[in-house]
Length: 353
Image 1 (cartoon, rainbow, N blue to C red):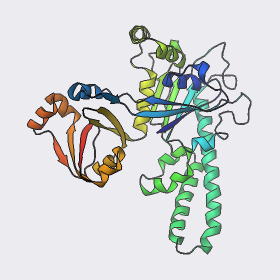
Image 2: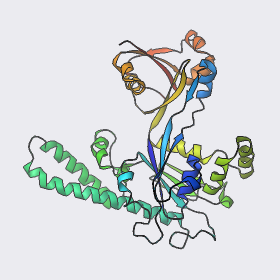
Image 3: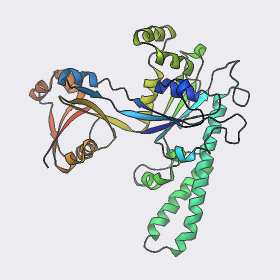
Image 4: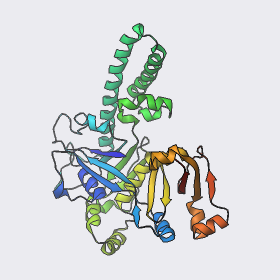
């Protein structure tokens, strides 16, 4: 899971990256992409540690990328065109727009206008996708008259891309027109930016904390108000000092946890849990994953020799207090290959190879 953080100069996108990753700004390389693996908070592992007493606890991680900044006045101010190869490879995007005012930090294009900046970021994404779409349509129109056995496949691709082109020309992101499943898979190799789930971060000042988010993006899966400068201070504090500081400013949860969770949800993921004497672990899975697919995520041998998935829901284990009591209460089930894993399922794969 890879997420790129995108924003105009002086938006605070690097401060957001620092707040999420915990990497000090002094350790970042301004002229290069910065990458950090961030743990996905999973408090349900606390219960598994208590019940199973494993030697190790393993949370899932998500990679965040901070792209090199551009100088104000550059042709590619947002850095989108320059970074398309990277952006087309990520799974989700975080768009950062600035809502705070500061005499020491100039605004993008002189003034501070987060809605304008969001519109410009969206426009750059639309243009990038429209260019890719038009180029492929042109090639297909030349190829189709000479096509052989793959004619029907190419024709279907052309019709889909023409529908995409029409949507983009009317300023609609592809998430609004591409159907999940076969259509989504057919377009995956193009790396369309507007097909990526978007989380919008509105970077506010300390004086704006506690207020409602100034505006929302109807095409974003989530919109978060974050004071990036404050969050970079919080992430460096000891937990006890941090709690007091957060209470003083009315901050309910760290931006790191809120943003990671928002991106996790935007990607349509759920969490499967496994536990035993060696390890308690959280596994991110696409929603709709079957038991045998989940087994393959752990190890291919488990999928190859799959017999059953011993499954108990997290809430049932918590209510029972132990796996033995959960079994006595009839809450532990043996599920087949086709079982669709649910969020919070604690699973042990029974297999034979």
